[in-house]
Image 1 (tube, rainbow, N blue to C red):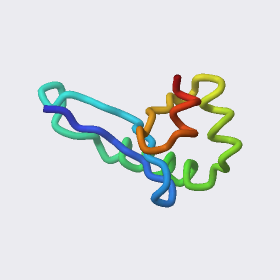
Image 2: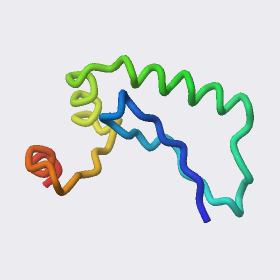
Image 3: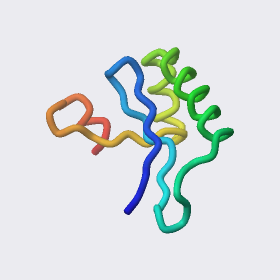
Length: 76
């Protein structure tokens, strides 16, 4: 019922960038697709420190993985 645009960083991180209902639109357009590809490249180049800073400012929201105790501590 929904589509999501997900950006991956070297298989380690999944960044959910956009979620929309299929009833509202069938898909993204070509310009949006190209913009998401550029955004994916930007996230591939980010360091852990940069990602942590974005999480700290609220620019990114971290979704916890129950198998990683260190991540859980940050998400409590």
